[in-house]
Image 1 (tube, rainbow, N blue to C red):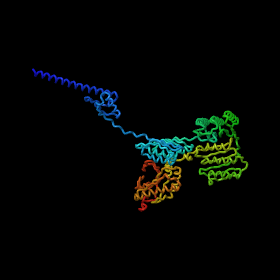
Image 2: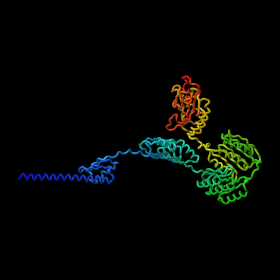
Image 3: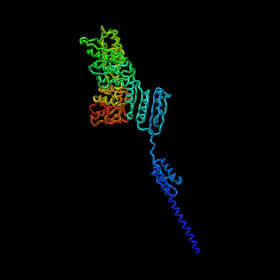
Image 4: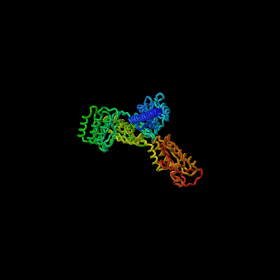
Length: 633
């Protein structure tokens, strides 16, 4: 009986223990599930579906790959808001991040009368000290403001070329700003005149490296026009401007539109400048051009507020009176109109003339009539002063009954002739005519302004000046590639020959050297390499030395012809880069050559590249030579 009681008690305790164990296990499972579900739901709500949640008892483990460290930390914070942060086990990883991208390197250089300032971020590989030193040499150390920062990253492609070009350009521009990026330079500058602007643009475009994109924004101030001149005429050759001036772009548009209606074909040139006598300039010009159109020919000349209207000889008098009357009544008050209807001259009576001609070579001839010996000596002295003492030939004779203003008209004509590259001036008692060619696009306007100012109101003159780009000292300069092409044309018809086994240029090639020298004088400073090549006969070392000597001889000949060769180099390549078969005489003759090649970045001399070459042959007729002169026979 006693044993049964003890057994019952033991069984009771055992049953209680089992129930407690089951209850505890159930509680743990409940806590795990609630913690895991709660944390997972919270992470999903925050968009962190990449995170994996696993509960183990009271501990909650987070796993997975977080996009960034910040996101990983946010996941821990979110989980800690659901369960005790001490219960959260972090087994998350962070996705590998790409290397930090290098910064955008750029710089700006500003130069004005106060000095030079440079600001921006450049690579540590750029020679900052050299740049500052260059600027200090120009404007002084105290006038250079250095605000550059440097970043320890590799320089991007095109950066060094862009920086070097910009620094060189800024040393040549007194008032400018350069914005520099990798492979790109923007230059904003102010020029003193339109000619200076054209020269700047031409020089910068010629010197920019191929790896750099150059953008230019160069402004030139409007010129002061004194007198403010315009000349429009209609004759047998058609309608045209000899000179055109406007005070605004809008006025220029109106004037050119009126000229087009009157018969001008193509785009006429009209200078926008300062010095207009009245804001109603365009109104007066439009009316005057229309008057010439109604007269069916003639000319109208403006010199400030003075207007001279000249009809064609033999025009209808009634129509002339009507047109002039209407024009006088409609012109703004500031203008004064002078009108002429020339009489028809008897063709059998030729008026006295003075003629001066200027040849393309610069030779001047003075012919015709002058008032007296003193006048002839004065005209000759003036011409020699303008054109050179050795270039003037005088054949003018003294004549009577010439107008009183003959002498100043002759000198004015010579001054007009000095504005041409070639042409002639003819002075008559009733007029003055200027014809010829020029490389100055504004020559016609300048001559018209000068004649209007010196001949006085009511004077008749005619201007037929043609602008030719090839005569323009700025735009007429050939590009480096054009220089190559021009030399190539010369070498198609001639060869640079050498004496056998020698670096002495044969006399037959001196004419070719003269032509090449004339081309290079117009080309200016271009990077040019003169390359010498030989055939494969003889020792390789001898051929290499001979080819270099011959290239140097060509360079010396150019120097002797006063060609600036500071940017030229001479180099020998021996028997490299053969362009023909050395086993035949014709092939060996082709391989003996001099090539003119522009120096470009990464230029590699290959037979396939386009080159300017002349065959430099020794003059031998067979291949039998001694060892001494076997090189390049």
